[in-house]
Image (cartoon, rainbow, N blue to C red; front, side, top):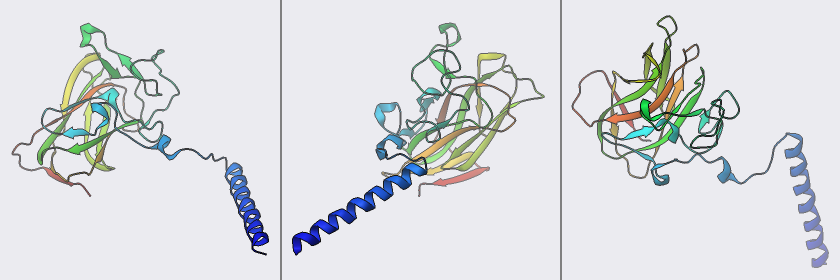
Length: 222
């Protein structure tokens, strides 16, 4: 009797599993390892980038996780026509030694974004700067947003720097007070505004902690 009950329960379990698989298939879904879609830091030994004075995050060191998770790019593959540094859909471009060397993000389009996992190393008040290059004219300036955990921090607007690889540094006028909370991480996003002119981005950098006055935005890890 007990053997028959166990056999019946096994059949029921198999039927339920089959129904679930059919439902997933009809919805166009796939069963995947959850680790595949995790957003993780890239570079810095796989650790979050520290928010501390002088820490510079090269733009090409955006998080691992893929399209729609760690970045959004409107085109498939590298629009530069070659694979540089990392094989993703983000348009990573080689900077020739005469223009500073290394890499930058090029072919940037409105609505695209990059994310970087960060962590407060030293509590205090910081400013954020970005290095960009563009031949965009004043009637169509480049505009980017800097956000932390989807909270807007500042908006930067800039026109002709003299060329795609003629780098100029722009700094948020706002200063941000970050509270150090051990073990907690944040996500910094660089997002291109709709209607923005085109530009290249080289790096983002923190400076501080320093003594500043208004305007001030208080940022606390939740």
